[in-house]
Image (tube, rainbow, N blue to C red; front, side, top):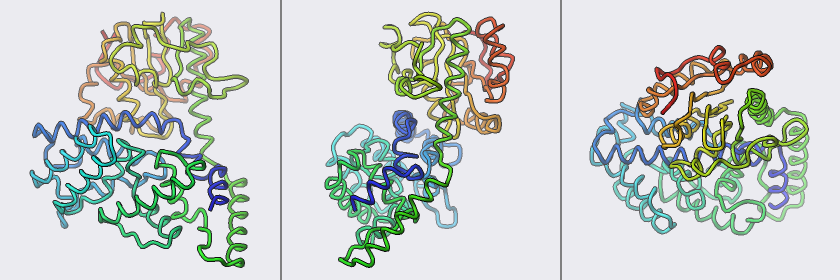
Length: 421
């Protein structure tokens, strides 16, 4: 088992490297948590409505479903199935309120006992269609308490441990959780306190990326399994990986860094990206290591420090903010920008930029139009395509005059104009 875990950790195709070590995974926790709080508040205030489509819940679950392979399809369980009338939280007011109370309690609690008590409480109500898929939301609230849950994870868990866990029942999820916790404790040096790692391991087993080690003392089976591992390792060398996506994200941050410096601005790179390798050095070289004291003490400062690139006229005066959205949910970037624009420390902010591949403009506009982001309509938010930035960045750096240089190559997304005072 430990041999398999080591190979899995080293495999550039495996979920450990492509998802668990992915820097943006950590960034997304706060924005998803904030979205869950909004869902709970809307339900408590009677403002949630009776539809999934267009709701704050859809925004949150859609964001989770885009967190790379482990959560692909996480939104399926929450889609309204009218013929079956499940999940029964849209047209049944008391069930909806119970679901809201579960979310609110789990946002506020901080112990495993409390989270498990809330799970038992919702399970006792036997709400049709509201099963352990909710654990995918709870994971982003309590990653050391609630592991993710989907078909591939269950399949991998059953293959590893000879179990018979089934989908759809909370007691099955809790039994699997116990097994995962014990396995995680035994191999923590190769896994993590964050249960996303052990769930990702089961996910890759369940998806057939690896064959589970034989459970019996069978030398022939063990030898065959080791041959399978060798084939997997060879395939990993030959196949391309999503590391190219990460290099592209870092490269675009580097373009924005260099352009900002060329235009005479101070530049701040997201706190957890400053040490990334870029060209012959690190991404944060030549940039501010910390924001000014006013920004550091402002509301939402934790989120602001995670914005991909900031241009400043001085340590406390942000001129422009950039979120690079290569292939992931735009939701988290918008939430961080809202924290900046509405947090009381954006007096000098001229514009917010969502920087994404040329083909993602429709996706960007669709996200901005969600009801959950109604407050962003009065802000100056612009879409900056990769292609335009790559084509014009050198000329803008050489001949541009401040932030106005970007307005000619970006597209307005909202009606807001001018400084975001």
